[in-house]
Image (cartoon, rainbow over all chains, first blue to last red; front, side, top):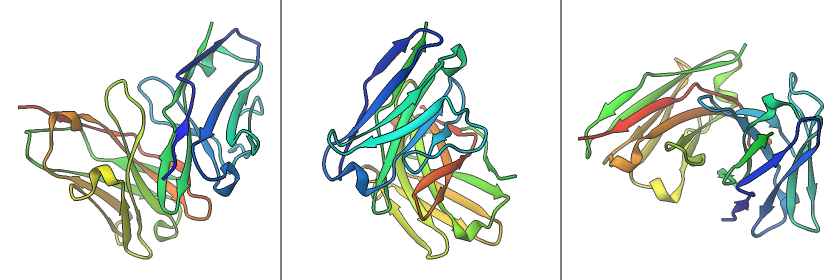
Length: 110
Length: 119
């Protein structure tokens, strides 16, 4: 099994762009789709990116996902930051039918 | 509209078992997998296991092997997670979630069930 490593926390000002990375420890990041979930305090997670780059309906286009084979990582970018974007963000992929979650990144919008 | 509605909070004694249900509506139950993820207070999401109802197969995280059993009842569109030999560090919110089997992406989450283990 591989691991997904995320920064523990990131912070940025309103209106700016932030990028959260998710690095796969072994095997190619491109081998299996990566998803990103947002979790606000006291709430269930919700999907903001699926299949590496796809946004579910209702998720603003300020959210985008990408993968980079050279760094073996996936990234979630949020542009035009708003205070409502402040939350924990988790990346997720899979190994067969085993699901693998990153450790989560706390985004602070200050 | 897809909904996953979980059973209510539980308080259990150490050494006992708990069974949490997850009733789904909207969509065709048997065309999805269902996964269970837990979150201890202030901690990260932790994958516990997954079931594919159409095949009747379950797969569990190594950490929970032997203690967790995930089942599904197609007739009621309900998934279940049973955790045995409970310890205080099993205190957590347990989430069920629906998984698209072609991408292994979670598309809908339940509201979570708090299981508290305390003597």
